[in-house]
Figure 1 (cartoon, rainbow, N blue to C red):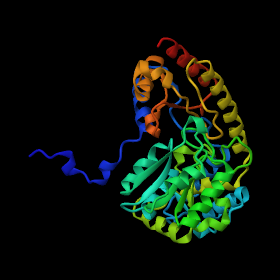
Figure 2 (cartoon, rainbow, N blue to C red):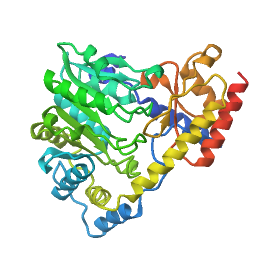
Figure 3 (cartoon, rainbow, N blue to C red):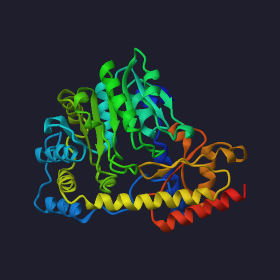
Amino acid sequence: MTTTAAAVFSDRIGRIEISATMAVTAEAAKLRAQGAKLVDFGAGEPHFPTPRHIKDAAIEAIQNNFTKYTMVSGIPELRQAIVDRHAADFGSSYSPDEAIFSTGGKLAIFNAIQVLIDHGDEVIVPTPYWVSYKDIVQYAGAQCVFVEAGDAEGFRVTADAIERAITPKTKAILLNSPSNPSGAVIAPKDLERIVHLAKERGIWLLLDECYVYLQYTGALVSGGSFTDAKDNILVLGSLSKTYAMTGWRAGFALGPKAVIAAMSKLQSQSTSSTASFVQKAAIAALKGDQACVGTMRADYLKLRDESLAGLAKIPGVTCVKPEGAFYVYPNVKHYLGKVGTAMELSKRLLHEAHVVTVPGEAFGTTEHIRLSYATSHADVAEGLERMRGFFAKL
C-alpha cells in the first residue's frame, strides 16, 4: 500500500522548511568535494578560533571528569556568570533563577516561542528577518505579522511601525538587533519606546541579542537594560558570535522566573542539560578577559569597510552600511531582470563565480543577497573581485 507524505507526517512538520542557510552550505559542500575553490560568504560564523582560555577550560573539565548530567537550566556557577556579565555590560538586574543555559541561541528562541505562543496568536517580526523566525513561529501554530524595514530606512525598524502592526491577536514582538541579515541596529529611542509599548499593551518582547556585542555605532544597548519593564521582556543570547563558539552550542535566555521555569520544563523533555564541559567553557568566556571580544569586533569593522568598498565597485549594486553584526545585504535589483530571482542569482554566483552567498528570499526580501564578511581579508578581496567579474558579464 502506498502512503502519501501528508498521511505519514504531522501537520506541524509541514509548517516549516529546511533552513536556507543550511541548504546553501550543503550545496557548497558538494562543489568543494568536486575540487572547486570557493570563497564562502554564506556561513554566519566567526572566522576566528575559539580563544585559548575558553578551550582550556573545557579540556580541564574533561580531564577532571566533569562529564555527567547537570541541572537542566545549567550549573549555578554558570547562571551566575551569565547574569553577572549582563549586569556589568548592560546594567540589567537578573538573578540566577531568571537565567537558563541552552544548546545554542536558536534553541533558546525555539523554547521561548513554544512556551509563550499558541495557535491563533500573532507575532510581529520585522523584515528582513533571520531565516528561522518564520518557521519557529509557524511550528507553534501562530502567524507572523511582518513589518517591512527596507533600504530607504536603512533596514531599521521603528516604534511607530511596530505600533501600527499590533492587533488584538498580538502575543509577542520578536526583534533582532543588530540584525541578521542586514546589520541594522534599532535606534535606542525606538528600542525604548518598543519596550514600554510592549509593557503597556501586555505583549511579550522577545529580544534576540545574538550580535549585541558587535555594534559599531557607539555604546552597546540591550533590552535588558530597561529594568522597569523586565516582566514583559525575554532576552535571548548566545556565546557563539561573541566568543567564536558556534560549534559549542552555547546559548541562554534571561527573563521572568515563571517563563524561565517553563523553558526549563520544555528543555527537560528535549535536550536536557547542555554538555557539561561546554558549561565550564562558557563560564571561562563570561568571567575571563574580555579583550578578545574587542579584538574580534575591531577586525569585523575593517572587514565591513572592505566589503562595502568592494561592493561599491560593482555598477548597479547598492548597499546600506551595516551598523553591527558581520553581514552586508546588497540590493541586486539592477541585475534581476537578466537572471530572474535573487535565488537564481545566488545559484549562478556559486556555480559560475564560485562565490557562496545567501539569497534574500531566505530573509523575506526579493532584491538582496547576504554576504558574511566573517572571513579572511584575502577572501573578502578575492570574493568581491570574482563578483565584480561575474556581474560585468551579465
